[in-house]
Length: 311
Image (cartoon, rainbow, N blue to C red; front, side, top):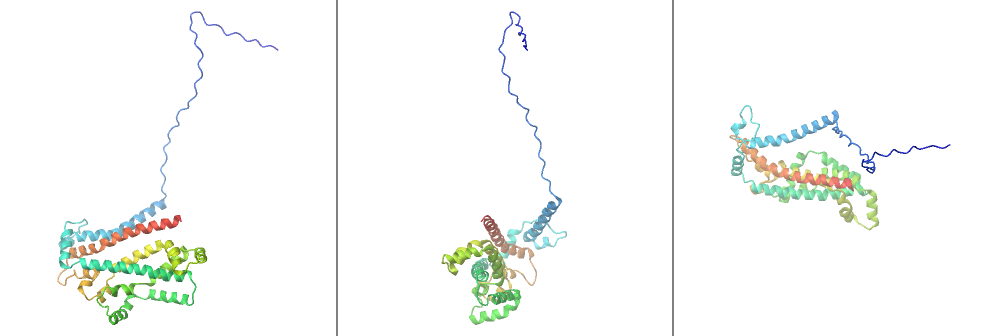
């Protein structure tokens, strides 16, 4: 069966003949840009953010109110309605506070006592907690129970026997009467014992024993690098508590040249009238170093936690 193909007709004479062009590639239209929808916040998340924000504002408000009172005069403080914004008398109130009490010597004494107590507490409490957490020895549970019992007793019960001890030692009026009795505390031992139990693996302790490491080497090379976040929290807590301590320094310090900052603040009060602007200016001077230490220590504390999570 044959098929015939009809020839293509020729163009008329005088018509220019052009070569056929190659078909161009098909280019699709650009895809339409679809706006991405914003992630929807669940009501539970929004409520959590609002609760956290409210808690943060409530925590900061006492510091703000301290600044407001410290920057106003006493007459401005008693006005109704009260002033809600800082005034322009902060420098004047700070000058009046320095005229009434010399804050430099109490500030130096407080820094020295707080740093010394913090260092001793971190050393002795971590040693005791490491022994309680990772070693078996006779009477371990009984000793730890005794530590917990002392932690439950009120601090005021120990003032009289502690003061009698300081009198017998001849330490009344001296700064080491504040440092030596606070060199270790039950809370630090309990806190670090619980932290070491979970942060220091038993397998790592066994490996260090196979390497011939003794107690102090295990403490320095195995325990301390793993419990830095716990030490950071305990250091912040101890420094702030020592800085704010008032009752024991007031009881044992008799030399005006060796008083601490909290005792010096109490001397700003007068029996004939209260200059609340001046008193709050002195309190603000006592709070500012704590804020700086807290911000620096909290940043280091959070960084150590992140490093521990990565490890």
